[in-house]
Image (tube, rainbow, N blue to C red):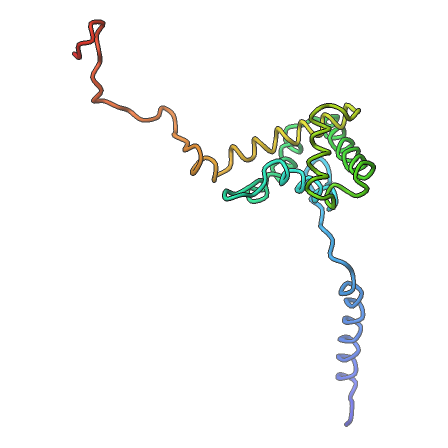
Length: 183
């Protein structure tokens, strides 16, 4: 088989491209972060908040927080509506939350058992855990998760059917007078 210069260059280009892409094939897939307008969220932070929202509103016979993307709603609300100080406080509280899970349960909140997650959240709800930033993180995450779920398409079309203002008009309703007679 004879090789000319054109074939050799083509094969060399294919081999070098394959060698450049090969290390990415052996890496563990990690969660990618979210790049927002005012701050950046790492993959671990995203996964932690997603797990927390899933614990707060779990999936049962109805969709839960994961199905309505409540974690992304929380990030977007923080990006659009929170001050820089509140964002920093939230992210510091997020770190404290994960550190607390590691000290109390021995693992990250994402890897805790369901019983361990519930015990941690119960302790935070009872205000047994110190830290203003931790409390701010938890209360903000919980409030925005509930807001995300209660304003989702599923909730407004299946659970509590939303009617536009002014609502229905019932024109043929008899008006009762004081004596109980219909007029």
